[in-house]
Amino acid sequence: MLRRFPPKYATPEELPAHQLKGLQWTVSHAWKNSPFYRRRFDEAGVSPGDIRTLTDLSRLPFTTAEDLRDGYPLPLRAVEQKEIVRIHSSSGTTGKRKILCYTRKDIDDWLQMFGRCYEMAGLTREDRVQICVGYGLWTAGVGFQLGAERFGAMAIPSGPGNLDLQCAFLLDLQTTVLCCTASMGLLLAEEVHARGIRGKLKLNKVILGAERTSEAMIATIKELLAVKEVYDIPGLTELYGPGTGLSCRHEAGIHYWADYYILEVVDPETLEPVAPGEIGEMVFTTLAKEAAPLIRYRSRDLTRLIDGVCSCGCILPRHDKILGRSDDMVVFRGVNIYPGQVDEVLAKVDGIGSEYQVLIERREDGKDYMTIKVERASHVGESAGGPLSRAIAAEMKRNLMVSCSVEMLAYGALPRSEKKTKRIFDNRKY
Image 1 (cartoon, rainbow, N blue to C red):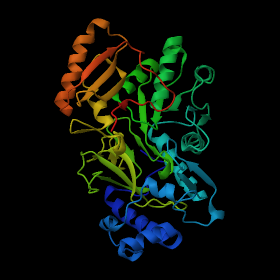
Image 2 (image 1 turned 180 degrees about the horizontal axis):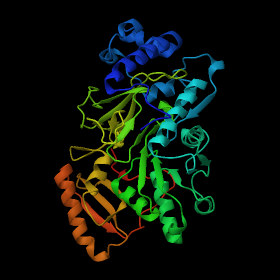
Image 3 (image 1 turned 180 degrees about the vertical axis):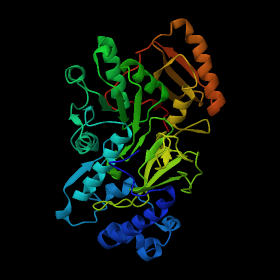
Image 4 (image 1 turned 135 degrees about the vertical axis):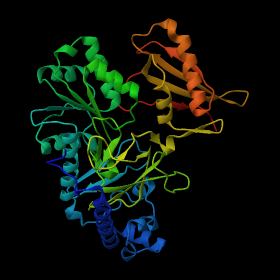
């Protein structure tokens, strides 16, 4: 299936040996060249010689975003300054930014992974890839663009926003593949629908990244853009950037590139591994990253590991879509609620749109209350509001064991954004 950008191992049985070799190299490299990791290993009482099996990974200390900020400007650096060819910085941080550095080999590895994404999505060198994500310090724009160039497809670096420009390029350049955030994808899809130009486009694939997606949002994008294939691409600046995995066309999870990194999924509170199928926090350890290797890096992103072999035939393992962040969890009347769980509940209700907001407040009686604002689907009339409200409240009670009030809104009533859309608002004052 993957011919030009194949896995670095031939069968699933060969993966552990490949990962162990990469883990031993990474620990040795970090021990010798990174003062931060050398100090951490000493504190944990572990050295490279102690890593004899993959189970020894658990002996290594965790790394966090705070470590990256504390080590500003070039945290985790494990190469000489002259070996660094690029830096990127993550978005949405407070205080000092998290800056990650890259060697030439790091960039080459990243583009190989990105090429694999495009190959898995079924692109050819005839495709025209319109890239509607941010450029600059962010990894997304340059990652999608250079990945497309490494693959051999035409890159159209249109950047985010500017719907007039996006629609003009879709028409004039006959774009076949659209790369964007889910929010930007929805915004552009609705604009295409409003302009009545869907039938004039050549789009056949959409690759969404940088934020959590819901089934309803994907369904809306498919309908309004008349595309059959929508792919989910994870992205984390600390782990190269986007392109470190991709959902396959069977929509049975995200294949991740386990030949470049080890993925652990752990309980955010106990930090112990969770079983496949259980929600946990994604923890990354790179196997070949030179400039800023990651060792047990707590991403705060939540997902589930998916057991078994995918029907698409790809031997690379899978995890579920990103379900939210562990630090975005809200506690409502004693129940832990993650954003992705709300997506899953709403997906069970027919007749609603993709956009919603969850508002939590504490009233004068000292109790917490939850209100969910949900748009009706574009083809659903106002008279259906009552039954839909009751259905949503019942599903929330049945699945998350919380009571809420539901406010149904007309399609398009909630704000759209080219950036990541915030959907849970905790307005309680502590």
